[in-house]
Length: 531
Image (cartoon, rainbow, N blue to C red; front, side, top):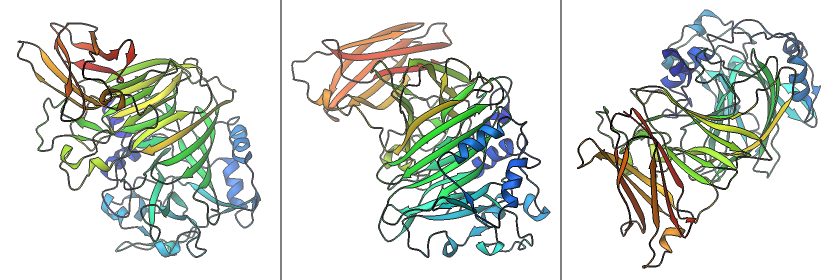
């Protein structure tokens, strides 16, 4: 991604605005970079052998993909195949959307199981073949391709009987018991996304980030094969396994997926580096932030705010809760939040009312937040936040991930276990005040800007009338004036405000804390102001 304009498009995640494809033109930018510049050509010997055995089942257990990744990492990287008939490589975006999977052909539909699986056709920018297998009773069988699984509208029907697939999506009853809602989709490089009850697609997750914001350029690993376990009757959970591959590493993933009011992904990831990896990003998240009431400079748009996420939230190993509002800067910004054994981090969509966006099509108030909960100790490292300038909402310009302090070394083995919460609000510390609104504008003080933040929570609403919380605001440059903390009778919480006089500073790190007798009443507020 970093260091060149094309990289901005590589972060494209898209969102569900149309009925049959969980991507839009923002996804096209992703695929154009990640699929056409890095991963095109031949098949690896290992997967060729697996496909040759397609006529029969092969044994499968919890260690199969891990051992496959371990062996594959000993070989030189060979990109997955991308050869397609000419009629599928030169499709327009809308033509690709016209290739629709037939819902009546969904896996497990006839058996009445609690999940159904639909498949994405190869074509357009999604040229790379992704091998798909169904696992049942300890055996894996390839899911065979047939053009009969799809309708092609006005496009010619492919004659090749073994084109394969580009990815898949899972459906399950989530909003009502008699309808199978789309729960998640895996399509394009190592990107995937999910939603919870009453939500629509927004931000994305990735299997692994390599070299994000590195001047040398970003490397995009791909999921090249999936093994999906047949769902069990009456069980609201499904398990799938994935093989990730790239020039730098091979990796095995296991996803345990449970849709609901919060959709949970339990993730086990084992990485086998082919070479030293000093810029690995674990549990990467990708989102879009264009503007909000905190930063509208140069945004001539009729809507109050446009973003899939409005803040980075952190729960540190020191038990501090941090809220960092996102920014759309003029220049690429990289922030690192050092920590030891983090308890969680995520990109959050806090504003949940329609009036905050006024967009009947995009419905940003329905986009999920995504919270990463590490399981076990991750050691020393940093949550890194990348903010990339964007002039519109079609680009995903925000990335967050965990970067270990020490590089992942060639020939090593590194295991990370974590839980992804696709939700409205991340779990934990409900009593602590959370910053719900953030605004800024010109101050009455010449050359200064005023910042106004509203927080609500049990710790604030329960304060006695005589309580006098202490507000501490600091700045890395410039001068802070007029810090004020006062009750907000309209919200039942408290309002924090202050002026920043930046003087000659082009970048100022702001920090605000509201405490009572040394005890935090709200999250710690961090914000980077740039000229």
